[in-house]
Amino acid sequence: MLNFASLGSGSKGNATLVEDHGTLLLIDDGFSLKETCKRLATLEKQTDDITAILVTHEHGDHISGVGRFAKKYNIPVWLTEGTRKAAEKTLADITSINLFNTHETFCIDAIQIQPVTVPHDAREPSQFIFTNGDHKLGLLTDTGSITPHIISMYDHCDALILESNHDDQMLLQSIYPQHLKQRISGRLGHLGNHQSADLLTKLNTSKLKHMIAAHLSEHNNCIAKVKTSLATALGCEENWIEIADQEIGFGWRGCL
Ligand SMILES: [Zn+2]
Ligand SMILES: [Zn+2]
Image (cartoon, rainbow, N blue to C red; front, side, top):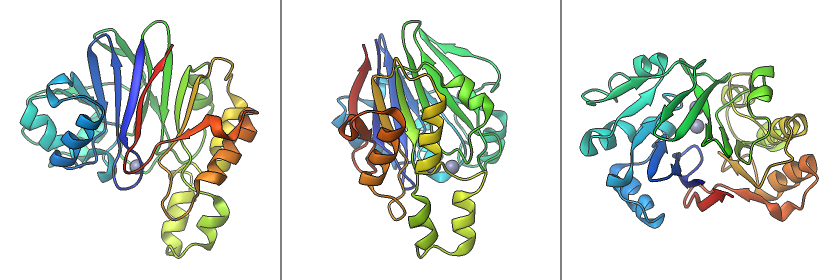
């Protein structure tokens, strides 16, 4: 059984857990050491339980906690060469750095990890699809636009953690400076509600049992708009759409 949970999601810090048969992967860590341990404990996990850390890209909300955490608890880190280069200082002195190629699937114990290249303003960003043979979990955040590659990769997921960063109108009217608005809504920025909804209409979602909206903007989005947008795309009840919270993430879910 492929289980997953979140320690928190949003521009103040991200971390996701994926577990199968005792193998526990931490994807990104944008929290302090103390905060990471506290949030792990809430999900009934300890630092010793973590098998490996996977990093999506070098932005602080994903990597700021990785170096210290990996060093202190001697946990191997997996990332692309581009992310390693971009985050050299943060990752100095980690004993085990493992590079993955975004075009090749790799395994950590029984969990198969398929990296997915995404358009985002980082050096070599990658999102992930996790499978254990029976089930498929897609994680997709920090993506500025949808590519044919993304559509082909995220088809037939049992569970999706999908960025729904902003509402276009709210972003347009927000107090953010113009350059930041352009960055967020640009091709290498973040997925807005309508883009995520559009992606869902292009995917085969017949197996989808968990739909979790993630990386919501604190200022340029609201839960009601996210739920309406994604539920309309899926033709489901709004209450079925779940939200990954910045403070509490979300509790354990499983692909049954
Ligand atoms: Zn981010
Ligand atoms: Zn980012």
